[in-house]
Length: 159
Image 1: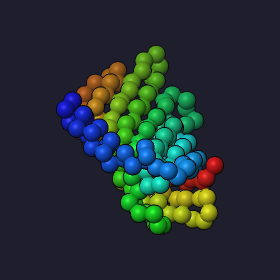
Image 2: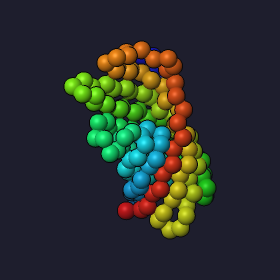
Image 3: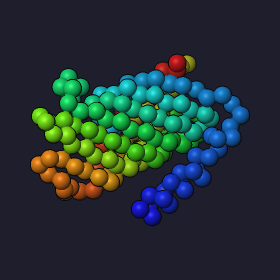
Image 4: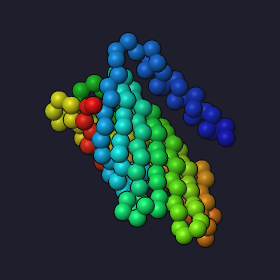
């Protein structure tokens, strides 16, 4: 638990310039593939080089048995395109199998690149390092590994 508190303090220091930014924010909507779900909707609010990203999706969208929610703070490292980003966040994944539910929660550490395709449209390619905090499945309540790295892709446009 001390590690999580230390990480939260580091996140506040790294991402705090957005709190005092004078410029208005930019809202982007998009579609995401991978990372925290197979297919999802993506919403990002960006102020200068800092953003808050939220994705909602599903691992098996056509089955209606699971939902994935991820929230990330991101820091873009340069104002030009392509630009690299790093971040920190949380991921929750709920799964229904018959009458039982399973879930996982993880801390996320996203890294990647964002390309500006043209005015108002961006393409993002990255990877998310997941560190599992809690996993509960009906048949198996233990983990073989506490970490997982998944690729991610997103197409975003200004709204």
